[in-house]
Image 1 (cartoon, protein in one colour):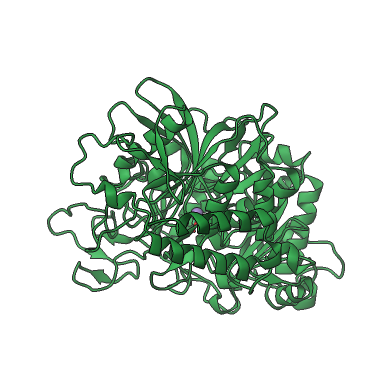
Image 2: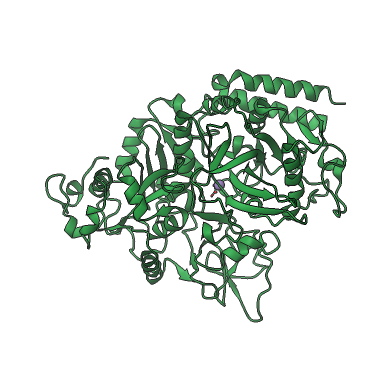
Length: 628
Ligand code: OXD
Ligand code: MN
C-alpha cells in the first residue's frame, strides 16, 4: 500500500509514524497485535486516513455495542418481534455481488483467467491498472469514519485446513456481519503470532467529507471495485457494503484467494455445502454439493427428510475446503462460522430448521418488515395477525397487490452457525469430515434428469465443467436465462479454469475416491409445473446416492451417466410423479446441450483446456448420437 494521509489532510506527522493516540482510545490494544498485523494496520491507516481505529476483540459485548451504534445511526432497525434481530436496508444500487466489477489481479493474465473473452470466467486486471485504480479510490477514503480491524479465522482455529485473515473496514455493518460469519477473538490473535494471513481492505468509498455522515447506506456504486491479488494474498474492496462484495472472508478469500492457494498446496476450495446423512440403520455418510448461488444449497444442507428414519445434519451451506488425507480419504471443513442465506422462498414448509434458527441474533438485509416488528418476504408463507401491515425493503407500504416484490430477491439473513438445530456434531472438527459423494446441480427446467452418476472421476470432472443453470438474483444479472456455471464456481475462480480442471483431474488416484453425481430438482413439464416435489423429498435421491456408494442400489447406463434402475429409487407413497419424464434423456436436447458445452469450452477455455475434457466431450457426443 502507498499514499499517505499527510499528503491529503495533514493529520499525521511528516514521516511514517502515526499519532495513534489521536485515533485509538485504548493504546494497550495495539500491543496485542503481532508485528505483521500492526504493519498492515499502519499501512491501512496511512492510506485511508480514518478518524478513529477500533481493534475488534470478538466479544459478545463488543458486538452488542456495535449493534447499538448502528441502531443509533439508523443504519440498523431492531425487529421487536424477534430476539436481538436487526434489519438493514441498503442503497437500492447496492443489492448484490457485482461480477462486472470484480477482478483478479496477477502479473500474467493467463494465471488468472482462461483463454477466451474477459468476463465469462472472471475478469483480469494488470498490476499497473490496479495500482492506478487503487490510487483513484483508497487515499483518504475513510476520512471522518472509524476503521475496524477484524482478525479472523476461516475454519477452526489451528485446524491444518484453516487459514487466517485480517479485514480493515470502515463499515460497522460489515464488522458485525464478519463477527457472525467468521471466527474472531483472542485465539485468532494468538494464531496470528505464528501464521501469515490474507490482507483484506474494505471501504464503502464514502468519506464523511463528501457524504452526509447520517447516510444510512454509504456506498459508491459507480466506482465499485473488488480486487483479489492472489500472488500477494491481498483483497481490496471499494464502494459496496453488500455481502459477497464486503464480507471479505467469504467469496473473495474462501473461494477466489483460497482456490488458488489450494491448487498450489494440493487441496480444493469449492462453492459447496457439506451435509451428513444417516440412514434408518444408523449408518452415516458425508456429502458435498455444488449448486450456483440461490439454487437451494441452504435448503439441502438443512433438509428435513420426507423418508422415515433418515436424518440430515448440517456442516455448512456455502463453502467447503477439502483435502485428501494420508489414508486417501477426502476430508472437508466449512471455513465459515455463520449462514448468509437467501431469504425469499424460505418458510416453515421449505426449510423449518432455518426458520427456527433466524428467530434470534440475526441480521436481515433488504427483507420486508411487518408493523409488529417481524420479517416478511416472498414465499414466507405466514399469516399476519389482524391489523398488521407490511413495509417493503424500500421502506414503502406494501401489499400483495403492490406489483413489486416485498423483499429484494437477493435479500439475506446472517445467522450464527451454532443456532442451527441440526448442526453436525463434527462441524468444528479440525480434521474435517470424510466425504463419500460429490454432487453437482443446477436449475434446469428442461431436459436434465433428476439424478445421474458419473461413470468415473474423469467423467465426473467433465460433468462439473459442463454445468449450466438459470441465472439468479445473487449477482447483477437481470432475467432468467441458462448460463454456463462450471462447478458453480464461475464467479469465484481464483485462477485459470483450464488449470482448475487439470487440478481436479490430478486427484484421480486416491484409495477412497468419492463418487460424483449430478442432480436437478427443477425440471418442469410442458405446462410449467415442477416434475419433482423437491425439498424433503430430495432425501429419496440422497438415499439412492447413499446406497450406490455402499454398492447396493442398481443403476442403468444412459448417454449422460448412470440413472436409477427401475424400482431402485424409493418412490413409495409418492404419487403423481412422472418417472419417465424425470429420467428422459432426449436426443435433440442433448445434441444441443453438447453443442453449447463445446462452444463454451472451446471459446472460453481454448488452449488452456485439458485434452481429457475434449475426450469426455467427444464420448458424450458419440453416446448422444447413438440415441434413437
Ligand atoms: C452467496 C452467493 O452469497 O453465492 O452465497 O452469492
Ligand atoms: Mn454462495
